[in-house]
Length: 255
Ligand code: SAM
View 1 (spheres, rainbow, N blue to C red):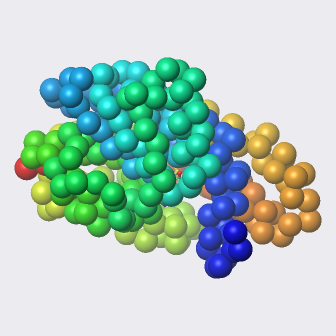
View 2: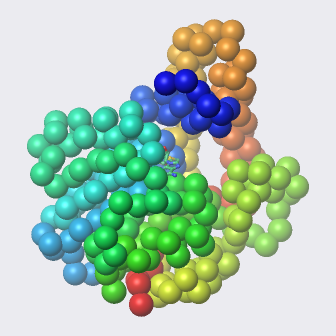
């Protein structure tokens, strides 16, 4: 398919890079299970939507730690193909279905789900907009569980503030994000910070070999060089400024 905008080219390239990795964002099975522990009334009737699922690292944790049925959605078809292949390999294809779609135009019915899950992806629609828009697809009393980039302090050095405000313009503190959750019609149930190993061991370290391989594959491609430089800077900034920000799991219940 011909590339229409630089944006689409970047999206394809980023996904070509990340589809070979187990995770596409910071997280871990332990933290997904911890978040699941705040959710009541799980049964074999529970229906979960996992939005921005990537290749399904957290989807497989959810399906293996519940009896639920899961619809996992991502914009990138390569990730969905991989997720569906993993589900088949694990014999879980009856309870997990990956579909291609956009989180801002969901192909679901109102009140269809008991849980909406989303790790590392809600910034693509916006925290407030996502919480507002996704609520209609949840049953009353249903849960939302998302991880989202958050500030730990009211003030931070200009270098890191600029980096994140370019990437996630509405990024706020944990207190602010909880207030948004309440304002958009959820009872805040829990908020906890992902530990550093979710970033370092599960996100930055696995990228290293892939970065070398990707540079070799696309030798001389300036866009690829820029993208790898961006990812390396993201890791450097994390080690320099990690006391100021991180991913936080927010769990809320629809009123
Ligand atoms: N949840 C996965 C994980 O934690 O490993 C993936 C997180 S990755 C940081 C963000 C994901 O959001 C990518 O897989 C990307 O393709 C997806 N994404 C971006 N924009 C999207 C949209 N509008 N609708 C659905 N998925 C989207």
